[in-house]
Image (cartoon, rainbow, N blue to C red; front, top):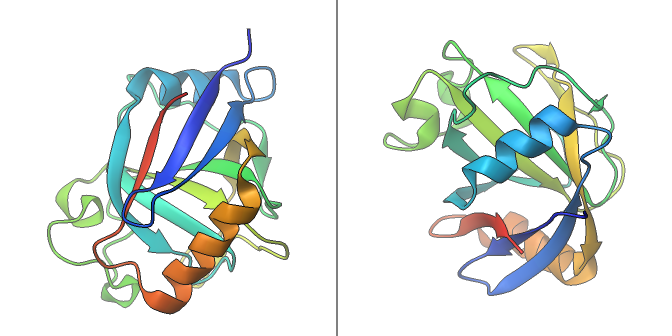
Length: 165
């Protein structure tokens, strides 16, 4: 059975639909599915390029671990990153007090890549492979346009929500 999720930029009113990659990333897909719905502040990638993401408190009973990893996500990839032990506390990242990045030591980054030429490298940590657990199957052009608006118009006040379709 195909499982679908939606990714929505709430204030902009734009939604795309993604298919979970149950065969390629079964542990990650199940962990995310079981945790839905999730909604937090959206951020635009600073290093990776064409990426929006949200940071939520860790939710899996057991961390999925690496599966179906990439450091070069393509348009439509939806990725899971596990950040533990204060990896995101460097002030250069710019996370405001009260966001998931500053509230908990275990943070999950759920990211949507909307354009080409992405590279997952971080100046503090080096390569940051992500688990590709879903792929967008509908609405990517509209979402990409809205993501570009997050980059140019600002992320403040915008939320990225993931839910079962």
